Image (tube, rainbow, N blue to C red):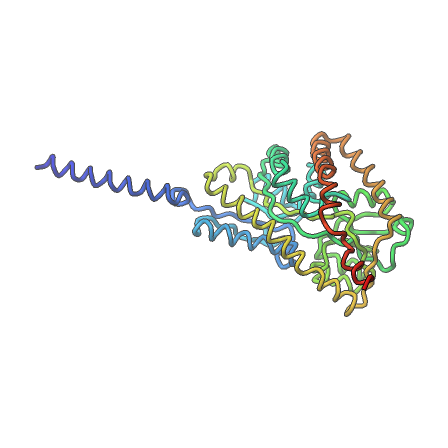
Length: 366
């Protein structure tokens, strides 16, 4: 009798174990400890299109994981400054951070290429390079040395070439100017003898208003409107030669990343890929209306940068890229890969789409 009861109990235990195993297979996240990570921001999440993708990505991660994965958003300065995200994640001071790649140019020169390249890849091209042409894998290899897993997690439309109190007609005008520029675009402007400084967005309006700087670039129209630059500078220069696309990443401490199972890693990858689509859709949806508001309501003149200036900037860009490539092996590898893809894609880009000014040509012909 005792043997029968014991066998029954063992059979019940076995059945329960089988049920739990089945549940774990059906929902792998249930078999893991819950993930509760900090996600510090490079920019305030209130900046439309530039940074509001991050909270959205965090929501998707929470939903897809059934609440088992949480990325708690911390605004810049709450844990670390926006320019310190790379170091904080690398050292494990924070679990993760959503940020533009490039502030770490001094330690990782190639990071600036992943953030933006002067006269480089536009949003769709950058998406193609990162997701389908080996860019993601290349970046992972470089950042692994710094204990970071970088996930491509956002891209926005071109930034403006800058706010000035006068229209640019010659690059001689920028010689000696105190101007805010970031990344490789800043390196190019230094070659034009500008006094380049890198100030956070929160300090730029006051710096312009008080004359601490003479001009600035920062982001695309929706963001620049929020920061109020149009109140102190009336000439808005386009196109954004220095950042044809601005690319954001979810930096994850590599030890934290390696502690996840495959399903959890897949959730983060999927959420970030969705974040890329979400951010470019939002960016493109909003810029036209804001640009019209600048010119029609705020007295701003939209200035198309003259071709002779763009050609000179291209020449200086080539010099900067050659210098960085000679000094840093990883930079050379990434820039060579991006340049090769750009050349390969050139014919399709030029022939596959209608000319950008097609609507204006049609209007003129009617």
